[in-house]
Amino acid sequence: MDPAGETAAKNFAKALTMPWFSKRRFEIAGHTDAAGSKKKNLVLSQARAENVVSFLVANGVDPARLVARATAPNNWPFPTVRAIRSTAASKPAA
Image: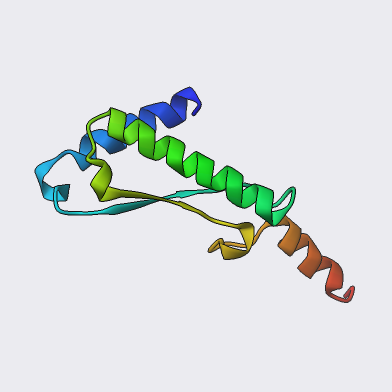
């Protein structure tokens, strides 16, 4: 985690220990870019999610409330740069 990510994760951990979140469970999703194979990206994104979960647990969050999950670029809720370029390249010129 870079310094900005660590600061954000510390703030998140602090929020998760507040009473109004005490009964909630959270899914921590790891992400990668679309470069490389899907298998390698899933392994990397799972490791990233687990790293964040470990950080949150080390900062006072109950591990039973957290689950780490890998995500693949084809599961993203937004288009990748590759998808945008592919779409643009397949459109006829005006």
